[in-house]
Length: 259
Ligand SMILES: Cc1cc2nc3c(=O)[nH]c(=O)nc-3n(C[C@H](O)[C@H](O)[C@H](O)COP(=O)(O)OP(=O)(O)OC[C@H]3O[C@@H](n4cnc5c(N)ncnc54)[C@H](O)[C@@H]3O)c2cc1C
Ligand code: FES
Image (cartoon, rainbow, N blue to C red; front, side, top):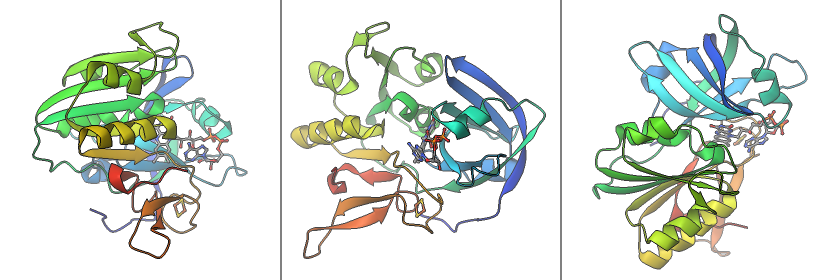
């Protein structure tokens, strides 16, 4: 599924950059050439203007608007880079590179899907749900304030979980799917402990599952080995490293070895 990588930066116009909930922003960028190539589950490298922040910040593609050539990205403010992005205004420009990564496999013939997002792992599920044909049960977990719920509701039955019970089920997504016994081909993105729980659930119930890892990255396009993860392999040790930015971020659940 990997395609040839374009390593030149694109300067694109910011159409809007607005908060969805506290500390979470949606930025819409005009980049028709990138939009034409993007697949669900791929990510874009965003570059800071501050000269001390050289490394790109990888952000998943949330939605593509082919008609207008717009890319929708959702980012949570975590550190200096994302904080800088939150100050950008409509009409300004920013530099980006991509799309990168393999993206989700859309060829599953199951027709019954269990789509699971955790926190900032939820945004990539929007374009996935849009492009995946079949029955979709969508579970999105948040610490407190949910977002993207109405957009996801266009594509299937949506269940929300929050850590503090302020909306939906009180608890984690894995507890919820276990309690409900939800089944289907799984597509999941979120923090490692959540993905590990989903991996175990899929194994127990014999479900096909694809996990999108949000590993810490360096270069973001395969040059630095800063993003490796262990996968099952036919080697003396039984494992080898794969690069999340290039071989992933989506992996078959059966091959990922969590620490
Ligand atoms: C494939 C992929 C998709 C992602 N999609 C999203 C998304 O859609 N929305 C969202 O809010 N976040 C997403 N993240 C996480 C996001 O990249 C980090 O939150 C962001 O890079 C933090 O940058 P910062 O400057 O604010 O934080 P800092 O901690 O100041 O960042 C310092 C450096 O560490 C890197 N870094 C820190 N945390 C991460 C992380 N979790 N993953 C990768 N690099 C990291 C930064 O890129 C930067 O180079 C994604 C990560 C990956 C790997
Ligand atoms: S981030 Fe540099 S190789 Fe993956």
